[in-house]
Amino acid sequence: MKLISQEMRKLAPELDPLRIGTGWKKEDLGKVQVMIESTYGDSHPGSGHLNVLVDEVRKGIAEENGYGARYYCTDICDGESQGTDGINYSLVSREMIANMIEIHANATPFDAGVYLSSCDKGVPGNLMGLARVNIPSIFVPGGTMNAGPEMLTLEQLGMYSAKFERGEIDEAKLDWAKCNACPSCGACSFIGTASTMQIMAEALGLALPGTALMPSTSPDLLAFARKAGRQSVRIAQMENMKPSDIVTMDSFENAILVHAAISGSTNCLLHLPAIAHEFGIEITGETFDRLHRKAHYLLDVRPAGRWPAECFYYAGGVPAIMEEIKEHLHLDVMTVTGKTLGENLEELKQNGFYEKCNKWLQEFNKRYNVNLTKEDIIRPYDKAIGTDGSIALLKGNLAPEGAVIKHTACPKEMFKSILRARPFDSEEECLDAVLKHKVQKGDAVFIRYEGPKGSGMPEMFYTSEAISSDKELGKSIALITDGRFSGASTGPVIGHCSPEAVDGGPIALVEEDDLIEIDVMERKLNIVGVKGERKSMEEIDEILAERRKNWKPRERKYKNGVLRLFSEHAASTMKGAYLEYK
Image (cartoon, rainbow, N blue to C red; front, side):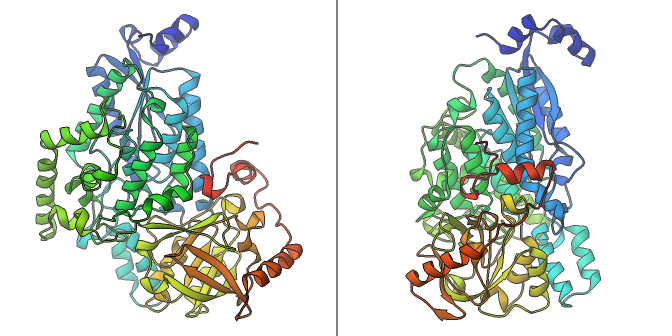
């Protein structure tokens, strides 16, 4: 089999001396060449440890007589940017990471790739780049951080902060939470976007079986990184092992069924469609809604469940989830092992994988003086936490293209309700109103002009936490936005409302005291009244048409830079908000 790296050497005589100047030895030049792409950097805990894993990958590559070259495109941290305009750069960073991977790989071709990342935009950015480059590739998830004392995890900081703002706890307690919520590197220890996307990488067949969301401090993660390095050299010399050979619509359906079983982040509805787009496959919110209906939700891990994310691996990780939903999966899909998903699952049962996981679970039990079993973390299929998935796509005259709710994290009281509209044109205004109790029971609070084209589609995390942590408001109002939410968000929150306000979507036309209908089970999101009075749907259509005549587009928020690019070219949220050039 011809190696593209060796063909390139014949065409570019400068390549060999330049690589020798970089530290390559002459004997390395003729080996299988593997690009190791990671988001390593001192930007946040999810990337600060990745070079340790990169070193293990390089060792594995060398053991198979290949040569690994390190490339970097560091990601940013949503948590560090939360509540500031910095969060507006979050979603577009996914696109930039994918673009840099494309540049790295195609400027100097490689025979294979290994991609390492842990967090919200780094993982989907790497998976998009992996698909676009389309050389034999393996993804290595960077794992999850440990929980702190009292099983403290970072998603609880929003609750502590809101309680402090309301005078319910003192500054000392808030400071304790800040100092103990992130005791190690890795993704935040709950099923947020970072954890969800690591799991999706494995569910798609692009990571080695059992590697998603391992504790970043585990020696098992180092061993798997080394194994991934070895496997990358092997698949570089095999036929039909490019990502496009492996990933199919069936692979995405498997991933979405796993997403339902873990109650994954709503941000996955942005990322999987964008990744699928790179493979020439169309995934939409409708795809998620179809597959989530009647899917069993099994994972008792925060924020919807009780336990920290490190427990996921101790209970058997993605393979254990897949065993429970096995009858619904496409077991014949190919994976980066060179074997099918079904073959991988059988092999794990034979090689002691689950026994090793249980050993770590017992260590966790000793650390926190608890007595968890695997079934406490991943429920058996017939003892599911819920049986209607975890995500619903709501539609109606307020969201003709759709809006997303994570109903497993929403109080049952809010599944069917009629609320009074309280629209705000920025999160800052809305958060101030919530914290100062200017929002009342029965309100539908809107934050608009925060979609991809409006402001980069930031997370509405602080506002959602302020609402969900309030005992009265958390079960009596809803938050609706064309922005998005953190994977840690809980409560009656509805995001991705499409079309977005900046494009003149109906969310831009909502006025004070409009009546808003939410019906999760019937998948409805409608304006059903004006000034507190019910109207027919025909009357509402006429009223919205009149309002549209008076609506004026807003001046573009960003005049230059990457957010200007994003505001001009972001696709619809329901398509994945990737850069779309027309």
